[in-house]
Image 1 (tube, rainbow, N blue to C red):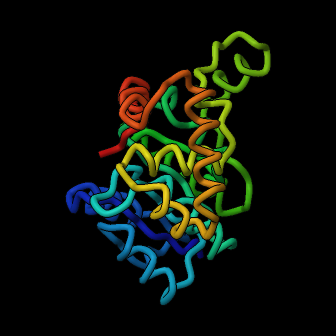
Image 2: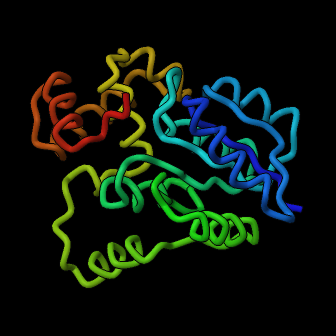
Length: 211
């Protein structure tokens, strides 16, 4: 039996997935959540094989929740189910620890296949994502600067974009203020900008802001 969890801030979306998956033999929905906080609380109470995660949540973006889940619940596979296209986020989400990425308008058969695949501990790579990977490996895709950032640099970047201060970020990531300041300087240089405001502009231009 594959134990599932659905995390999406829209009740109608959760209901649609629930109706679709309740008909599938060998799958059991352990819980549903509409916020990141609710999801993390329920994960402490329920064992879960596959967590279906939307990227846009009201209290925390799905990227941060993905990383938190992988740190605290290594046995749980995270399948991103998003309204954002694969071209935007699939590769970065897989690099951040997701086991697969699907768009919400995917076919039911693709969703079922993805769940079975990641439940076995394997990556689910759709045809579109496979094409993106192939182009990247062949050097045919021009990577934007943010795709060259390390995972830690990306964390600091997104927190700065949300308006968090250097001291707040340092406390949240358990690092020194000096270290975060160094990361900030590196980000400004790598992304070719001069201020936090320009970092935010860059993030919006590249559709990195999920609110």
